[in-house]
Length: 205
Length: 205
Image (spheres, rainbow over the protein chains, first blue to last red):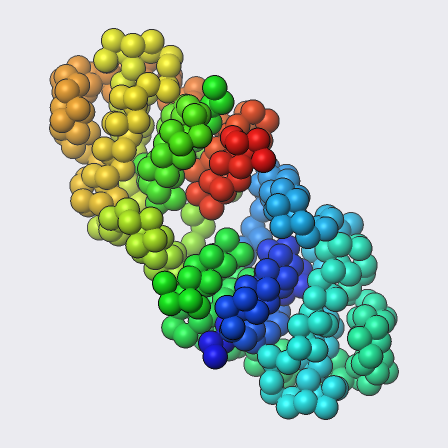
């Protein structure tokens, strides 16, 4: 079974779209998603490039573009009132999900990671929730049957910090410079607009 | 008949792809392309944003991405040895094509502009020609039956300079911040990756 390494951050609009489109595509094509939360602020510090570099002119366009993309995909995207937003807690929590649900702590392909990541994405990009607040993250985990207190403790642990640093370093080592990025074998694709290329690669065309 | 205003520069790889994909799409959908050469260096000076802002890491990725896109579209894209390249002469020459072929000087939808722009794109992005050299531009015009000497004179004229400044100012007034950009009615789309949105708009979906 082919695996798609999915590097993402909750603060990235295009990661939001990819977090729903990629699992659908992989389900259809019999592939597995490997969820790699990346701290994009840390990524940009190392790679020296801020893909969010923005002017009011470009920002205006991008929000309109995202709105159109939401209409096209029927994902109920809504511009959040807090933007950008701090995501470290949410990213660290994501990486602790496997161990919290009693699975292999290093297996980032588990269904529960997908559920949790999509729940965080929906909270921020559809319902304007404050995902920088640990209470929000803990509530979302609770809704998935995960122990809220255990999640909060895990998200603040040294293990979580080490895992987030490792995921971000792995991204840097692979040549990632922005999110979302998809890696299939030796091929890297940047941006939700390359999901068609990911799909063609998965079906060997 | 619907019209797509196409803002482009010869120095832009994505404009190269769009210069072939957009006319095909418009032919299929009964729409007209309005060719607006834009001096992207001048555009970036005004809009304060350089979409080409680049790190070696991102540049490496983009060339691979372009190569894959060339394979997908079957356009024989080849990384040019001179990059970036000065395009002012080629852009000014393009804007003078209508008057050189005896048509309305202000009609940028004429078939000859399409032929000429595609010839310049092919020369640079497929055959590694030096399109900063006026002799190259004049030769390409000659191959289309346009008087080479007249073209050279026209490309250096005040009229050509005024037309390029006007096209670039029109782009700025419309909110353009990069190329390729497509404008249909009130909707603006940036990047060849939005041609599917342009197509859906043209067919009213």
